[in-house]
Image 1 (tube, rainbow, N blue to C red):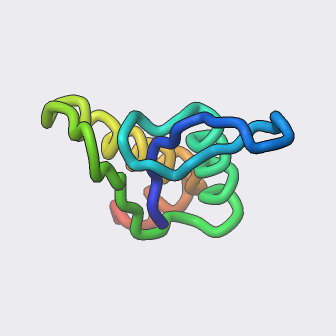
Image 2 (image 1 turned 45 degrees about the horizontal axis):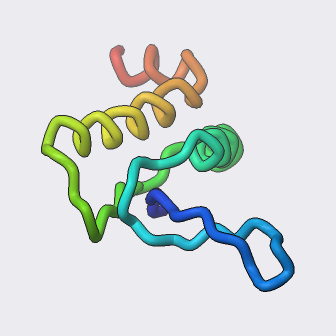
Image 3 (image 1 turned 180 degrees about the horizontal axis):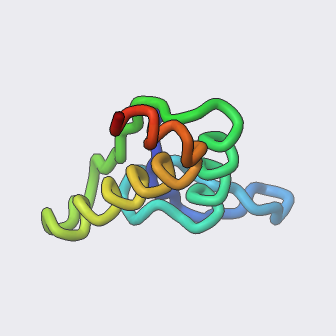
Length: 85
């Protein structure tokens, strides 16, 4: 799965249009959808995609860490006990 930022535009009818530009932080709405998906399907390989206006390493790593935290939080607690034994 890939997560990326987008640019908000409007189409010719004035309706919201979200362009997958990969040039800004992942939006809250995308994080919410990712968390919902992880709860349904479990952890999945995930890439934070940032192709333009690439931020500093700490900002990019924070996004990757957030994805990891969402995947860990979405797992049943028993799963981690089973791994630890």
